[in-house]
Picture 1 (tube, rainbow, N blue to C red):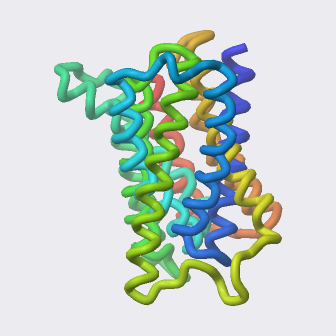
Picture 2 (picture 1 turned 30 degrees about the vertical axis):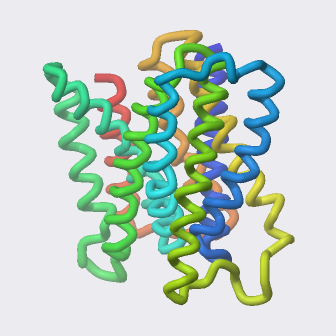
Length: 285
């Protein structure tokens, strides 16, 4: 069951990443974040009411609030990076978020094993190569790589905070609900500031109602992935769950190749592969 739920997590996260990146090519990234998270919050709110999740309220929810502040920054950075593309490079680099729990462990006095040291070295090499050194042809924009690394740091922080925000499944629903309410507040404030400064909240032609199902899917898939990952981590070894769940960039890359016909330079593909390999080594070390 651990493998099933963890692989389901990879599928959901991979499709959500692909959908979010595709939507930001037509709709401002902040709008994608706010609308998709609003749909997710509405569904989670109904679940919390149905399960009596409010009984789990307590000081731990401050971790969820903190995750809600960091989350929009990570999502916005990630969606902007995906919009700049290519997705087959951006998505694997985002899996470097696993380095955050490793760093927390170092601060607390833990020392990485040989696999973790190897993972750090491999992942850093992957970041450099995935940036597309000028060996011929156009490189991936440096801004896309930087945004992806910011997103990875944010995602890793969110995962660590959400872990501390609940102790059971009912509490997890409440924590995710609070997180998404905060996401909406922070994202909405950023969107208002952007509009005041002359930015666009909507594409030309108004709100893309035809994209609403896709926006809903992105938000709900992200929530569902959090849920299936939590179940996977509770039904078996966290290491196994983390490794299998971290395969989601493969789904995003395959979706980009199948629907967008993306083609990567050999050095970029090698870098993306090394970043993913480094992530797996970090997770299993």
